[in-house]
Length: 469
Ligand code: ARG
Image 1 (cartoon, helix red, strand yellow):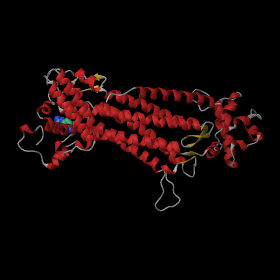
Image 2 (image 1 turned 180 degrees about the vertical axis):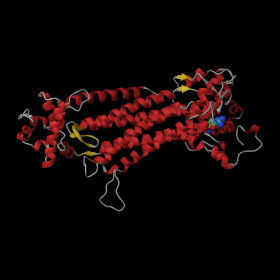
Image 3 (image 1 turned 45 degrees about the vertical axis):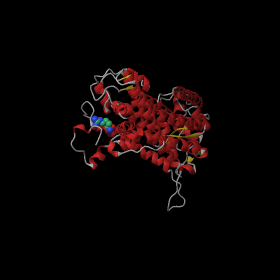
């Protein structure tokens, strides 16, 4: 029978027992559960609610249980329902009455959410570390490919040439924002609910601020009803993970496209490709596809929790037990995808020639030819039309703008002179786009500096900050 079975005459069926259990999921939080119980016991002793000897026996017993679980020497029993009951039961079996005093002034409702908050902080921390690794690699690849040109696209059609460094940095900034979201999710989790008991606080003289300090929370939740039923911080983490997965899915999509024979912009390392069981020539970007696919699953985790929370009355409801599985899945999936993407980017080969060849095709100079006329006084709208005619001419001849003669240009406008060749030159087209944030070489150089600064800031903050365990 369960630890709460006093008012029951019979137990639930084995099926129902297993249906209602969260142990398979929440045993991942055993370290957090033990840390929470130790803090609670020490605080109870400090407040004179239990004796120092009892608190010491509890702490020693919990330390032993933690070692046993670490070493795989702890038998989990589904009949204990969850990690909280499993540990308390074994503790009490081992140390007797002291163990049975641990739950004084506490409910599983504040216990579970204390554990979950501590665990969410740990998940956010791991994700921030993986995020930094990927960003470091993106910065390195961006720097290694300075001076490489490729077509920039809109509507997946050639638009204007850009620097590959600029393209990589666009992804770098997405992941930089993701870091900020993970940090916010960490901060959202960082409030102490312990001491709220089942829903209304307790008659024991608990010192909630003491457990806040002991557990390394930054503050104490001021409303017991909210404390036991709020799951916003998990939504925040799910959302941060979802947005980051969306960014990974966009990068994956480009990796998949770029490694087709039509593009040929990159060659993935064999370590990040797979073959086909029937077609001997195949080299598939499976892992990029898998990351792209897994984005659906993480967004699903976010939506599932949003819907679970919808219309839920105060305070604790068993529905809330559904909160952990999805968030753990989202965090683990994102962690694996960040790690995989980092390796894939670090080892892929960039085919500069294929990129530059494409950057010379598809009338990528058209805007610059129009700007050439506009700078000589022609209204831009008119210049746009003139260049439109030139493109049509090229289309008919099956050539590109730089194959036209000066006469061809002059036939459309007298303003064209021999210096039009400069407006057609790939290097000058890119170099001229030096507005802040543009793809011009100087602007990209400046951007690279900002990107490195952002990395250094986040990295220094992360490694100087030792999160309490
Ligand atoms: N296993 C539960 C959960 O994960 C712990 C809290 C149970 N509280 C209760 N009153 N049933 O949410």
